[in-house]
Length: 219
Image (cartoon, rainbow, N blue to C red; front, side):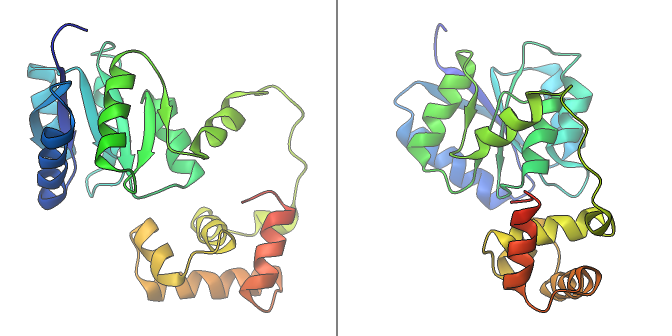
């Protein structure tokens, strides 16, 4: 690619955008330049449609629909536009959803500035980039699509989608406060979901739940 990679930031936290912009400017070694930013889905769609960059660094969770909504608005209209998801979430559902919607890669916000700059340059060059272990989610989702149907699990079917999300994070060892941050809910709501899961599965503590989730390959 001739010249630096032109990058556009989409994140609803202004301070985070400022931090990313500053760090990329310091570490990119003239390989990329941030040319714009937006704090909402509507603003991002409007600005990107007028002046598309090379790579959009895209937050997954925002109040007005998040990264998937941006992708759904623009991916078909601007097929050459490359999207790299950047999120606090490492949940398989989030990774798979944005990749299916058209993102070229997915990295978490624990990534270092230099690693992020490298990831942006790589996706601009045609590579698919993922934070460690997230690639496995994508491989699992896109391989063997027509394999045997999953065996029904009546106990698992009792859980709501949100309860499953909470259970997966719990089984990975996340504390309630960390689960709340990942899912953008309150600690009290996490406690309510865990109580409901314990009741539905007839388990007595989080350690039994973790084994239960592992046995069902939820982790």
